[in-house]
Amino acid sequence: MTERVIADDEVVALEEQRDYLLKSIDDLEREYSAGDIDDIDYAELKDDYTARAAAMIRTIDARKARVVDSGGRGSRRLLWIGSIAAIAILAGVFIGQASGSRRVGEVGSGDIRASTRTLLLQADDALQNQNLDDAIELYSEVLEIAPSNAEAMTYRAWVRYRQDPVAELALPDFADVIAAEPDYTDARVFNAIVLLEDQQALEAAVQLKAFDASNPPPFMQGLVTDRLLRENIMLDLFGPDTPVPIDQTAFTADEVVEVAKALVEERQMFPEAQVLFDAVLRLDPDHVEAHTYAGWMLARLWASPQIIGGLGDDDLDEMRDSATGFLDKAIQLDPAYPDALVFRSFFHRAQENIEAAAEDLNAFYALPEQPQELLDLITQNDLDNVLDG
Image (cartoon, rainbow, N blue to C red; front, top):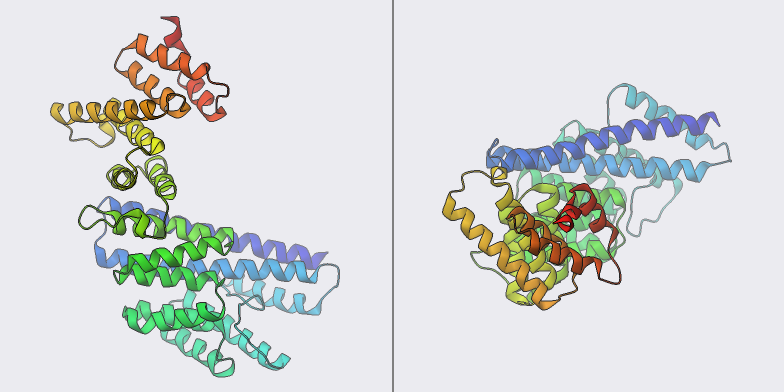
């Protein structure tokens, strides 16, 4: 019982450090979007945080796996790993993944597995302490023992790329790992990042979709989210310069709409969201959800122009007209689409058109079902008041 408590405490400490790193990635994106850091510092910090977070995530996963594997057996192996990890945590050192590391076709004696595991621990430790040359050397030693070790091949390629961002040197190693073990999520993510930075967004999208299909663990999904990898791939593909039609990519229109909605609600990246809405409507001019949420975004910005600032009267008039056009089109396409009815009711109220607001809200209440999130939105913002005249 004492052993499991010790291990659980280690996991809590590691999770706190993971959360700090993921928050750092999120903060970095916000600072870069605000223009507070330059392109060079942004790229270096982003690569640093990504590698450290990924190593930490793998460490947590391995630690949890060891706790489960040792439950009820009083394993001496758990005591050994626990004591090493406890010393490392007290020293403020991030310990990498041990027996939970992924290997492609690794075969050999217990001594070989133990030696590769030890080297991987040391490599992750070097990586966390920014000793990149040492990390590369240690990963290379692992590959001398087990040439197809997925973790060593993936992270050596990633660290080398961080030192010298030449995609042609990193991509073959990622391809070899993925060919042997398609569900190794670390390789998929790093491969997508390098492809995107090498202006191969179409292939990066393929890798990200394969990542999605491999049932990735939540922590790797969090890494993709915090790095805005999906958003950046889509913006590269569908941006105004040379937009690629959505149906020529690995993404669907519905997926692009969901990312655009998240950019609005979670990131307040309004121009970028509009780029994605526009991409969907180029493919499908009758996409009700794209019309609805593009209109809702513009309606709220019109009602609260201080959110983005710098808007003149002509800008606001154009924004109001665009919001009206999107919302009207959505309801024209689907008069029973609840989101559009509620959003247009709010917009009418903001324009002091209470009669029109009440009409849309009554139409919403007349629907056979009302989504709870919309009912909550109505209650929280007292929209029912329009029904009182």
